[in-house]
Image 1 (tube, rainbow, N blue to C red):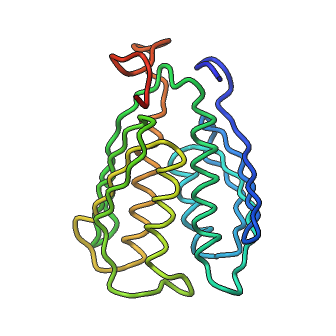
Image 2 (image 1 turned 60 degrees about the vertical axis):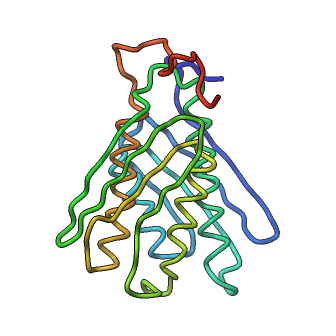
Length: 203
């Protein structure tokens, strides 16, 4: 496994009869992105994730969009989550916990994470419309669930208030980005140690 002094990068590919997804990322990047999933709104959200986490992110996804967007959305979350987990290596020196509160016009969303190797999603987000453009709003929970499960992250997302569905979704992705940026950052005060009294995460 990687140590904290090694490059925290990963490349992961996943191919099924429904999708083909490839992700490359660098946790210590500059927020540069190159994203193409075939779903315009999802591309926009993943670009926000990259820019505000400062994680360099390249995503290529091809899926059965002629059926619906479900498989491509979920599998993109799976592969990005797996890439984050691999890039974290041995987890030594990371801050582990972080909370971000993101205001966006009339909307405000709180995102808290624990990079714990104990995946869990708490999703307190409601939408007033079934779709954003061509994308079903119910799919956003599926993306965050897939990401949290495969990244090994406890993830709590609560939209405290808001009216515009675009703003609500975008504040969730930006909140994840800012919290992830802080939680995976190397803390010089804990250098060389796993952030747990157990000496290991996930047990």
